[in-house]
Image 1 (cartoon, rainbow, N blue to C red):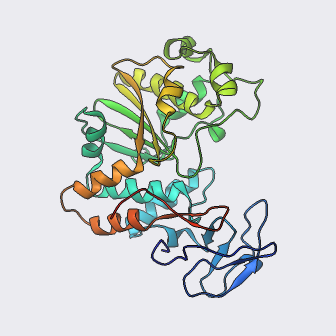
Image 2 (cartoon, one colour):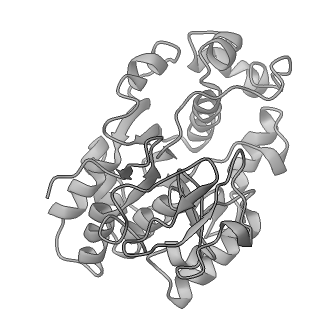
Length: 320
């Protein structure tokens, strides 16, 4: 896996070419524009990566993943059968980072302790659901599908949190962001499905603002859907709900203020901004565990592409 140690600090981008970002490589490829394409003319023949001015992509997602034993790959294969889209081979893929980090926590029985460090809820009996896929049920989580139908979503295009974690006393939706932000709007602004009427008008119970204000004016459509479905699901389970927006430390600093003014929070439902860097600190200070050194190195070496001046961007704000 390529990272800060293997990549050039800056790359030269001209009107027609982009140089390979790997240190010591003099290869240049044709410059991509608009949409990223995996075509031979954009591929470095030495390092087998597809290159654009801002990022690169491996020939396969396996090159971007840390955990690849038989059990990991079997689970990932089952997830990918259900997942709508994946760019896990891309250097700046938030899906790849989510898998690498949360699969590490799960494999080392650190999920509950990590959540407790964030919420102080002492959760137990955790079950990690990646992109809607329930390991226990072997398919899309049935309660999530029930919530999708309740609020007028099609199952095949329904809301899909990156990570869902169920415990004995709380339900966690984790929406992970890396290079993308939280500004999202519906593809059809005139069609609000059953978001405002489903669940016996559950919307009015958990929001202070109306649908148009949140989803269209404030552009918090994705967070709105996760808050709506998640709180309703937790109510069916009679447990607490946490919507966690997992972001880089230097981004989305005011998201709690911006989103909280639209929602009804109480002791049983809360919205939290958590940083990837705080997860790193948790791992760093945790007890010795399998692959801990590899996980720490991943955080320290991770990159998220190049900026518009051709300068390499470190993934996380980590000192040391």
